[in-house]
Each structure stands twice: as structure tokens, then as C-alpha cells.
Length: 129
Image (cartoon, rainbow, N blue to C red; front, side, top):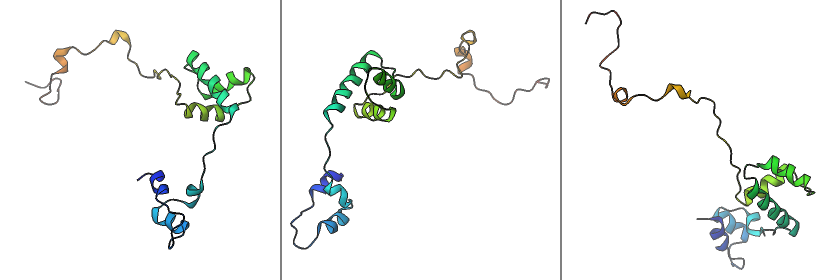
């Protein structure tokens, strides 16, 4: 059961169980019962709009490049804040995969006749057949 459903089950006016006892029985912390989420400020929402527009132009920007771009545009933002806002909006950059062990193009692929071949035993050089 989710925390939201368990939080909704708490009855503040219960005549026998206090709120702390109900939280303990439901397995949630008392602070999560009293927590009220804080909405984003207008400044942060404006910054998220700028991040979204920048990300459409440059989808390879990670949090470091995005923060650098925003600072150059005159916004006061650090890498961690850019990272948090990008994660909140579900933005993740496009990365090129590391090409550490790619085969050489002249190598080619294994011919079909060898791909299905199975060995009967070890290959012995110089052994009588």
C-alpha cells in the first residue's frame, strides 16, 4: 500500500489512538503525516521554461553544460539545481555510447557455414586420424 493511502487512513479525531500511534501502526513516519509540499516559485518555473527551450535546441546538454549555458544567459543557477530541475521535468541528455571495443570493418562477420558448426572434440595437430 502506498504512503499516500496509509496517510489517508489516519483519523486525527480517533478517541483511543493518538496520531503518533496510528503512524507507528501504519508504518509511516509522523513527519510524513504533517508534511505539506511546497509549490515551485515563479522564478523556478521561469527557469524550467528556459531549460525546456534550451533542451529542445541542444538535447545533448547534461546538467553541467545546461548550468553553464544558463549562467551565461544571466540566470543564477548551479549544476545541482540544473540537475534537479532537469530530473523533475524528465529530461535526460542524449549520449553517444563509448566505442571502446568495436571490431575493425575489414574483419567482417563469421560465414553461416561456420556459425552452425559444432566440434566433436579437441583439434589435435599432427595426430594420426
